[in-house]
Image (tube, rainbow, N blue to C red; front, top):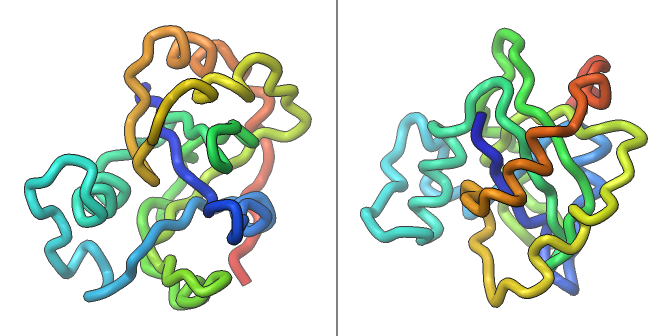
Length: 159
């Protein structure tokens, strides 16, 4: 299992409610289009293109996701193991508070989970990419220990 982290905007644009309401994580920019059809990976670690490539092809069912706003963790999710819920390019997210965020993955966000010390695990980190794997062993251990029962529910629909 891999643990991922994803940003939900910046101080002027918090789109975390979209993540929770539709059981998604979204990422941009969306040009030139669907990452399964266009090359985004540019060979530069943590560039926008490389992040979109990893977002599209790297997460697997059972992986966990930390949702963050700034340096605060605000949610934890699970990549579901269901048919047709991997990566998609959703025009519905073409303009989210001025951001072009069509790259979409389904995530079951934990219900009623108290984040506790997870909330501040990135408090002293200078900067994190919008989407990346988490390699810090102490964080991976905390996230891996979350009981699967927090993720036992149906996905919300994308409307």
